[in-house]
Length: 232
Length: 302
Image 1 (cartoon, chains in turn cyan, red):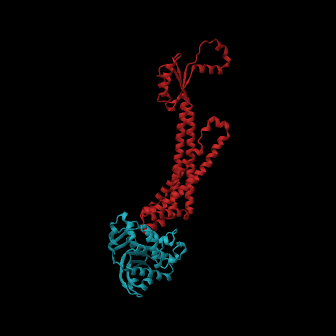
Image 2 (cartoon, rainbow over the protein chains, first blue to last red):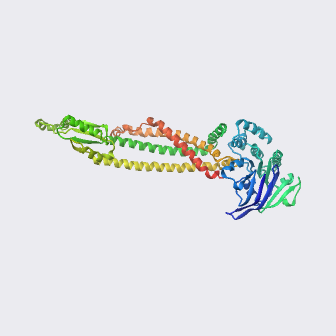
Image 3 (spheres, chains in turn orange, green):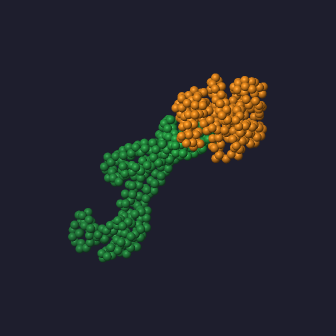
């Protein structure tokens, strides 16, 4: 579960109120789109959820961790409980597809035998089993993002946070990526996807949180293929 | 941590050396030059010490005894000299008045007539004493003069002070040069490590984002540093050997200079080869490994 209670973030350096009195609750197993224009506070919200940033006021709970009070030494353990998908893929360039996915399992000190079983399984899920020995530089944008999703899902996390996962890939493949995330969501994993592609959100529908100038402008469900004025 | 995961990190470290070969090569070159400079300077310093030790060892104090001493009295003086804190047991040699008289006559053959008319031996019995610590020569002279039966002690104070001055100056200059080289090398190595780590900051970021602890991220980078350091250590050892033996052979070609400075005592490389190799590899790997780890600091704060 993800919960933000009366969260405020104020950047002292720039004097910007990035988030103001934000209250969000995302239950286990939900799929949520977070949308908003540039400067709306999407990145700040993500930084809060990954413990890259602490709120100026309020409290943030993710997967049972109170991030406002999380000790530095506990941050790695917390991050292993979530899966991150990045806009720029962030794959380790000198590791093969298999090694990139296996890496997160090594971090959690999983046995060799488990890694040999789990990695092919998740690569198969993202339909990249045949590219296991390829390096990231040998893959297309869409394939790289699928590796990113496989890596995020490899540890079977409770939550996957996807930061503009379709931002760097062919628009035609964007739908495929979201479908992949929806498949993972069907397995019971909570998925939070940040995007600015309104068409994509309207196509798939579901719960949408729209941020505007650091505040929640809209938090509700829209039908698949539907449109909502609050989305604009 | 499981053994399989640890070996993976070690392999990754070694693999990264090749994958990031341009930066690895830059770090390797910096280390190579640094180790070569420091190594050759240290060897030069060691050789200067050897030469000075040798010259100092030949510095002798002459202890003259009273004219007619019994053999037992001479033996007592000898024992007193040998047990002095300023000498070693092997550093006391007796030079009898008879030997001295024969040598004197041989060295001054023109005065034969005088020698024939002399019915006594004017030379004293002498002990030639090597002082273990040249800086204590004045104390030694004072100590020897207290021994019963000793008439006079002759010591080359000026020469001793000259040698002490040379050693002190060379120690200070040599130490300062080596220290400066070490500092310069550390700065260069640190900067090259920073550049290398900066180029791969995203990799560190990724590892942190997916939940790696700082030590987990550091291990492959440290291994990479160790590996480059060892390679640079081996290469610098080879180059040091070539440079050192070439310099030594330059001295060897000039026999006069060799004899004048008694350079036969210079350290042969094969005698210290393993020490140089071990020191270079150890210094190279530690400098490189810790340099990389220190440079990672701010990139780990994610």
